[in-house]
Image (cartoon, rainbow, N blue to C red; front, side, top):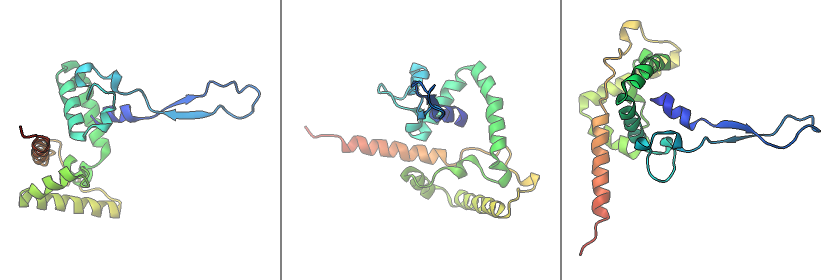
Length: 180
């Protein structure tokens, strides 16, 4: 999934159409963003106004892409090995991290979700992060038996994030209400 969103946000390079035959300098290059998400099918475009999938909240974009890919078995069978290989090459499991340990904590939604974690999950998360930091400092990986296996890498924070997002949406709805 991350590969797909990274593809849409990668800049493309164009050369200027000016004639540079008299100049010894190479042509001027300008970096431009690819067209908006018009390359995505209509049913997963974010809104009627053109905007990139990357500008949406990350959980919504991931859910939309996940639903799109899993609804098409041939596409899923094509992307699944690539995604597995990407997770293996990312290396976060080799230092003992789960995927959701790497979510940005600076966002308000994730901070509230982290406060709602049960004590045991919060302790396990802090332990995994400290152990990964120690591996980073020593430039080493954990022993193979301590690596996180793909079946162990389950979303533990997502239910809390979804709950916080629903509450915020409900709060915005009630804030926008008017009395008759």
